[in-house]
Amino acid sequence: MSQDLIANLANAFEPVPLPAGSDLYVDLTEFRADANIYRDLGKKIIQSPQNKHTYQLYAGHRGGGKSTELLRLKKYLEDNNCFVVYFAADQEDIDPEDAQYTDILIACTRHLLEELKEANSTPLKNWLKERWQDLIDLSLTKIEIGETTLETGDLIKYFGKLSVAIRGIPSERQKIREKINPHTATLLDALNEFIDNEKKPLPKDQKLVMLVDNLDRIVPIMRGEDKNNHDEIFLDRAEQLKKLKCHIVYTIPISMVYSNRANDLRESYDGDLMVLPMIRVYDIDNNPYDPGIKKIQEIISKRIEEFAPDKNLESDIFESEELLDNLCLMTGGHVRNLMLLMDSAFNYIDDLPITKRAAQRAITQARDVYRRTVEH
Image (cartoon, rainbow, N blue to C red; front, side, top):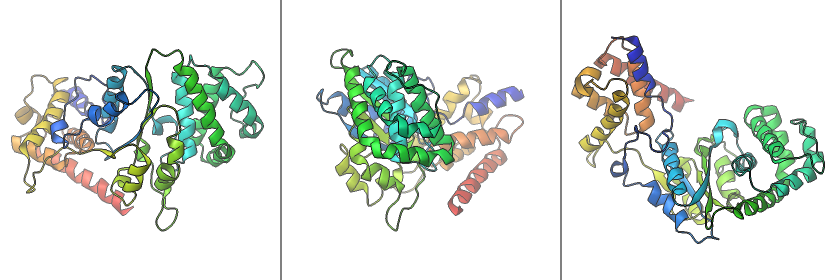
C-alpha cells in the first residue's frame, strides 16, 4: 500500500472550513435539530426593511461547523442581492487569549475598507488626521499626513498594521487600545459615513452584511466574581456592536448561550440566540442513533472517495463495520472530533485498513488531550 495514499487520506481530514458549494459538504440539517442557517439567520436579513439593520448572534461548539455554515450563508446572501464582508477575526486581527471590543472595531474597519474600495473614504481619512498626533506615537507607519497624500490604500495599510500589532505584539496591544478607546464613538461615526458613501453606488436595494467569525474563540478572563471579558465585549459594548449601519452576524462563545447572561443577550440583540447543534448520534434513551451515525459515515466516505474511489469503507478503509460505527460514536457527533480521530488513526497504520488497535490509540490520544485541557 502506497504511503502517499495514506498521507492523502489523512490530509483529507484536515479540520478546515469548506467553501460554499464544496462537493465534500454533507447536509446535516435533519440531524442537527433542524438547524438551517438560511432560515435561522439569512431570512431575517433578506426580509428586513431596507433601512432597518439586524444584529444577530451565532454560537456552537468549536469545530462543530460554524465557519462552513457561515460561508454557505455568505453565498446565499450574495445570491439574494446582498454585498457580504466575511472575515475570521482570529486569523489576522485579534488575539483570542486577550481580546477587547476595540480590537473588533479596528478589525471591522480594516475589512470594510478592504472590501469597499470604491467608497469615498474621506470620513475615515479625516478621522485619522484628527487623531494623528495621538496615533503617531505608536510608530506603526511611515505614512505622511497631508491634504492629498492619504489614500484609501494607506488607510487599509494603517488599520492593517494596527490589527497585526494587536494580534501579534502584546507590548503594543494595550498602547493601541489606550489611544483608540477614547475615540471609538467618533470612529464609529466616521465608519458609518463611509458605509453611507458606499451604499450610494450599490445596485438598487442591495444590502451590506458583515459576518464576523471566530469571536467564539475568545478565551474567558474573569473580571470579578460574576463577570468576565465575554460580558464586557458582547453585553457592555452591545450598543457599539450594533451601531454600524449594516447587517451583522457575530459569533459568540457558546458558554454565554447557556449562562445566566442568555436573556440579556436576547434583549440586546435581534431574536433568539442561534446555536449550531452537534450531529445526533444517540437517541433519547442513550442508545446509538443509526441514522446519525450513517451521516457521519457519509462525511468520511466523501473525503475518502477523492483519493480511493474504489475502496469500501466498511472493509477496505476500516477493519470492520463495527469498528467504523464505534469510531463514529466516539466523535460525540462533533465534526472536528471526527476529523482529528480520522487523521490520528491514519497516523497509526502503515497499510489499510484502519485496525481496532489504531482506532483505539486515536481515541485514547483524543481523551488525553481533553483531559489535559480540563485540568489546565
